[in-house]
Image (tube, rainbow, N blue to C red):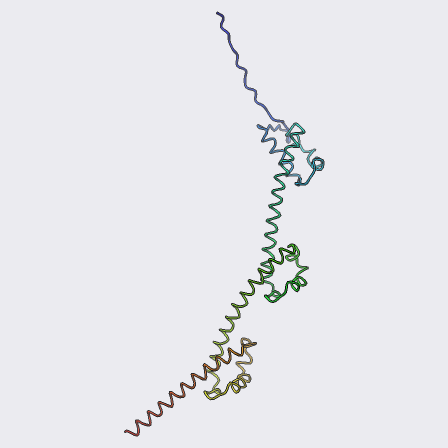
Amino acid sequence: MKRVTVTKKPEVKTEIKKEESDGEEVVYETKEDAKNAFKQLLRDKGVGSTASWEQAMKLISTDKRYNAIPKLNEKKQAFNAYKTQKAKEEKEDERQAAKEAKEALYEYLITQPHMNSNLLYRKANDFFETHKEWSVVPDRDRKDVYEDAVFFLSKKEKKEETELRAKQKEELAILFEDVKDIVYKTSWLEAQEILISYKPFKNNILFENVDKEDMLMVYMEHVKALELDFEDEKQKEVCKRASKSQG
């Protein structure tokens, strides 16, 4: 019986299209590597998601990586896959750019000295229409950002007003203590006239546009305290006299 010797054929490694780069051969080990090189070529040349094959050809055909994929139909398949991915990226870039533009507009509005919670959108548009931060945001989004800014400014203004009034009342109370012409019998009308002519009051910017009701409240608290002091001193004097008479 004859012995048959079977010779195993050596494995033949399939090489994907070779290309030359600066005089050296580049071998793509897999089709996926070749596709990736071709797609990177499209990306490097700035081929957009809406480009046609003919438009892309004008940009990529002279590059050595164009031959990474040998067959034309496979080139076009890779091109279409690239466009799909590129469209997703462009959409995300647009979304991110729009988000950043709205955030920039919001920060811009809440720091603008001309902006306040009472400024109408129409007036704001007239004033800011030439400003880049305003114009780059579409009108429908701009209105939303404007309303958010107005809401923030409204809360900020109310907080600042509350703090200012508290500070004014505190300083007014100190001021009343210093004005010796105001006694417990001084009327509110008389007290106002005294204050108006009192330099520490009229020259203090803190008291510009001070709320009259706040002034009245501080005045009433002050004269009430003066009256109590007067009654207390009066009572002490009565007791003192009574003590002397008994002695």
